[in-house]
Image (cartoon, rainbow, N blue to C red):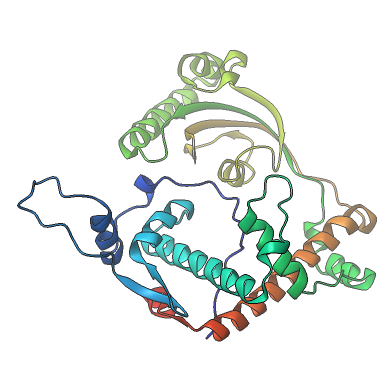
Length: 304
């Protein structure tokens, strides 16, 4: 079978279990399994959590998937569930191969690694060859992507942060509504931005009238930047939403990044190409392991 494997070490923001969204039938069953009924002894406790996925002889239950889902943010709970299931399948495949090769005793954690992470590192270093990209490889990539090879764009931004927690839909709607009201005021009285920032903003920049100064790509959260760097100078007609809430944004100036030479980019291009080669090799290796240990049920879950 072909196994679509995510990156092993995911550094995306972790989502709490309460933010995962509406439960799928399997997830609901797992959650019922993990919690006693509040209705008293007349309600019988459910049986074991259902199992739809196996890696060899190892079952991966819906209870395990439900616990793992909190680490896999997704717009829909079905996607979160599939991502969580894949992550558990990958972990079990690597565990079985580490056990088969007897590598656990050779694994010495480095830095903040757990023993499991150290064993996975030893396995990958032993089994996956990732050659360094050549000078020609890097030059070809540079020529094919010249328009992307530039210093970070910079923007001078003022904002009013109307804070709301990611999971609090009511608060986020109220923040958006207030933001829209402030935008209407500022359309008529632009010189009141500092005043309104001092009154309403939850960001420390309110002490400077909401002025963030010059920011470059990569210096703030991605969802904020994606929207801000697409704006034209002036007051944004809609609020900009981020994980922190809704922002009223005034873009004072935008400076596109200057083009970079090949020499400026070579090290970053080489690192990127090496990562791509490594990920491709890892995908191939995991698919080999999936055949060796017979993953069952994952394709059905992904299709659902």
